[in-house]
Image (cartoon, rainbow over all chains, first blue to last red; front, top):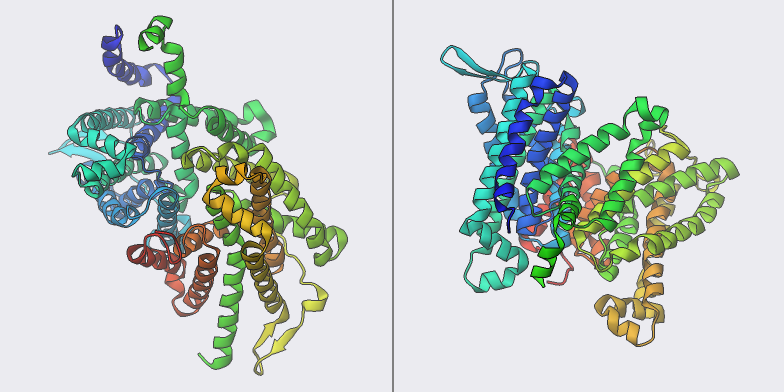
Length: 329
Length: 288
């Protein structure tokens, strides 16, 4: 394994290069890349469940959207809210919600789990859609973006595009490192064991349910972090942020990138957001750009049929030299 | 709430529940027998409703439209099974979710391209357009009763097909051991194709007969789909009996919920699901 050092430093290199991006590129691309980074956090949080814990959640938008609503409801109407407490509070709300729903949904497995997670996300959707809590189907505007102050000194103002971009990048890197650390620990190895054979792990004396619940809660909290950032970027929240299309899209990013790799989720988010941007580009496709979901749907089906290991799997296949293949045999 | 009003709500709840059963039974059969989770099931409900609308405006009669549309949906079901779903039997649920999610997007956009994004109404057939008077100012439409009747007939037919016929025996055998059935000389692929087409046709038929009541609109499938997921989870996956019990339960709960606690009506079914999950995680009639 001669390229271990390279793969070890590659993430730092990528983050370093990404940090320079706003200095050289225009507002539009900085915004687009911010969106990619937010989705990357969201996709990594789901990868923890799908790729490492063996739980396919089809309702992950619930935690993403809940954090957005938490921010919108916490923020005073025309003043900025402090990033210091509003971000941890939004994440905390999501972690708590994940803990409660997790105790229920983890009673089920497989196809039940898929349906039940979806149903709970829909429940949240209807709560915000049908009642006045979150402004109904119109949602709520977030007029002033959060800031971070130390005494009287303003450290971060998310109104400024570059600062928002850098904060998002830093949080994505932090989420990546945190998940790497967690997955490398005994806890992470136990999760992988549960994914492969739940009964054996239980027979070995592992508290399977508690491990899964911990993973589910962490995943919900990280999805919440992404949702908070997304709400800041859009400047409003409405029930669409909780919709099952959001859950489907993020699952797609995880698979497209390659599940169970973490960095695959980043690649997947990048590819998915970019593809969406290209397909709905009116300058290129004219009026048929309105129907971009058709092409997206076909693309998703093709990935499901022909690219089960995702782009990361494709890279790994091309990246392997004949010598390494021979060494494996 | 006086008796006539209660009776109307009761009949509405039962009718809604029976309609849900048509969609949910297909979903639960396709999962129970073929092991496929079909997110696009709601899209077939939508396709049925749009076919009913477009063919009835073409022929001038909803009955003729339904008779024309049923063979079309059966062919659609068989074609999709042959082209797409056949490749998914041995695959993880994850890929089934992805593929059928992609299929939803494709169906929605095709609907938008072919039929546009407007809301359309469908006329109730003249023969069934009467109402039965209950009190001075309350009456009950015959068409809703007719829907309930048709759904009950179909449910009975489904029970007979699965429990009493030779084909039903093969279907049940295929659900428990695919390879054994195959080696006994039964064409399991054909059976799967039939079951899939049956499930699709039931969902589409539900969309057709309900189109005069619900009207026809974009994304109408996803609403039904998610309620049917709840039905299948409560009833127990793969159990047609469970689908019937859960459909009626959900139909009544939602109808009475809208009358008694309109604010929380959207949530009632999910609360019901949560309660069932705590009590019996495998559903009311599911195999543990």
